[in-house]
Amino acid sequence: METPAPVQAVQPQPAVRSVVVRPVGSPSPAALPLSVVAGRSGADVRVALDLVLQENAFLLAAAENAASNARLDELIGVSSALDQNSVLLAEIVGAAKGQTVAQALLEAWRGEVADVVSYAQGQGASASADLDRKRSVIAA
Image (cartoon, rainbow, N blue to C red; front, side):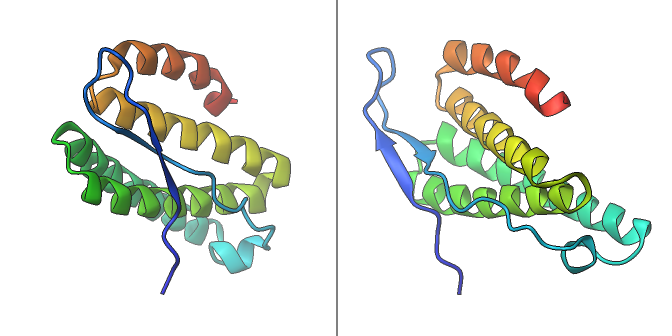
C-alpha cells in the first residue's frame, strides 16, 4: 500500500471563500535504468509514456472536478495519485535524459498541476499568470 502524498492547507485569499489545497513535495524521481522504468525497446518507452500521460489527464480531470465542487476529501486523494503519476513521468524522462532534466520536469509538472487545480477553485488570475511563466520550463 502506498503512502499518500502529504497536502498542505493554505489560507483562503480574500476573494476566494474556500480552502486551497496544494500537494506538498514528495520524493524526487529515482535514478533508475530505462529498462527498469519503462521497458527495453523504444516501443515500450512510448507505451509507458502514453499510459502515464493518459492517467495524468484522467486524474487531472478528477482533481478539477473535485476542486470546482469543493469536495476536499476527493481532492486530497486525487492530489496524492497525481503526484505519484508526476514522479513516474519524471522517472521515465530522467532515465532517458538525466536526473537534472527529471528534477526540472517534476518541479514544473507539479506547478502546472497546482495551477490547474487553483484555476478550478476559482483563482483564475493567479493561475493563468503562473501557467504562462512555467510553460517555457516544460517546453525545454
